Image 1 (cartoon, rainbow, N blue to C red):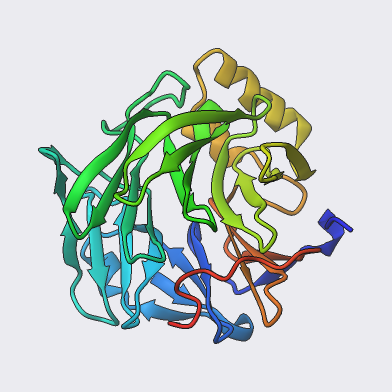
Image 2: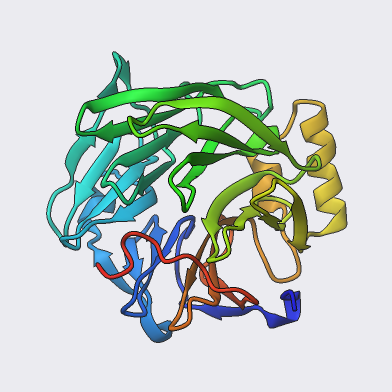
Length: 317
């Protein structure tokens, strides 16, 4: 039985833009926060996992990855951009500030895969976008492995979260303002090829993603607060939606005119959800879905009919 809005509960409080969430076997639910750094929220309490020094130095953690030693690698949306590593209250150390001759601007997301490779997304190479359109093909995906750092996909539309398929043969990425999930073939050397687009209805704006144990890929969407399930054969279904019809139609119409602004995105909300951006399966049975957002100060959660796929970092936190 699929979840419904009445099933939603919340964890934590006082968070600032908890856009990215991660879970671990310890029961910890980690979330990025623009006033506390990265927080850890077991049993409803919220404590810093990395200290406020990061925020004081101008860093704004967005997507992040948990490492074996308990440190975090995070994509910085602050002015200096780049990818950084931090542990506890230490000073952040640069991981990637330039790739293929390009300065890494404010970045979106970081993923560590089962081969200890680091996948990085940048939504837009230029800064200060006034409007969010499908014409901004400035996003790219970078890879850091034993060969070093390099750009492996370019010309993407607002590149958001990425995931490697359970069999390791594909890389999936959400192109938010193209309203699609894109699948690449992934070879053992990290080369991406055979780009295939899975298109969703206008206004879906997919952001975060996570696999379940059956190989389905789940995505959440800003503005529409949709939860979408993509099956291994490429079929998709909108499982849940929570949006104010008037605000949603206003944002959708503005997008069609290439006039969608940050204010229209931020003001879009539903009855219980506010601009969903990420998701992670957790709990003892991996059937609790935790969801981050742009507009709430807590983490939403749902009990799911299927267990999630355990992430690489599951036993590290």
